[in-house]
Amino acid sequence: MPDSHDYTGTAVASPLSDEALFEQFLEGDDRAYTKLYERYDSKILTYLRTILRDHPEAADDMYQEAFVRLFRERKRRREEGGEYNPVQSVRAWLFRVAHNLAISYLRKRKKTIAFSETGEEERVWDERLMAPVEESFAELYGESDPLQDEELYGKLLACVEMLPTSLREIYVLKELNNLPYEEVTRITGVTYEAARMRLSRARRTLRKALSQYLKS
Image 1 (cartoon, rainbow, N blue to C red):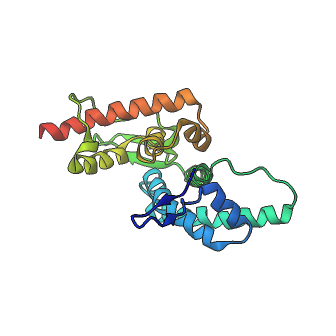
Image 2: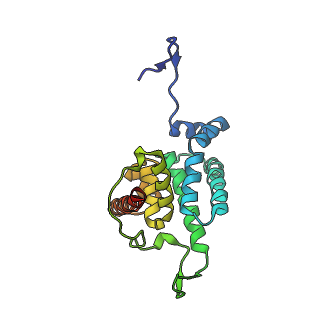
């Protein structure tokens, strides 16, 4: 494919792919790392803050750790030498690292005690990835397309924060980051059918929740 041209007719080089930048980084070009960082820093941070909604400081630490691991990966490959399997998707690799860091953190959290509004004691786990999909908003009615309205979009993000992590993670990866199912399943470790089911439930829950704002 020929390079694109600006309005003066001067050829403009197409941006390098993630994988090409990663290969340059492995060869020692730290400028390639900077470009990868600029492409994904906000996405990875938003993802971690969404998954670890009650632990923003931990999310910020893991965000830094995810990119530090790019350097560790380069060091590992240099030490091993010889042939290595190329990374199929740098994007999926980064999200997978972030996912593993978040899950490891949640699993290390101890069981906590929470009290319901009635005062009855309930035992809950911070490991919300195991939360049943039924834990969502109360049934509402009506539908809306928040992506066409800036105010509603902000409310959508607030509603996403309230989803169980099992639904929230899939929604953030698929809807907000536009990742294909192949990468979503690689990152989360769930099956294709499970990912589709969770996304469907997340969409349905969010549509119902947003109808509350439309009625107010």
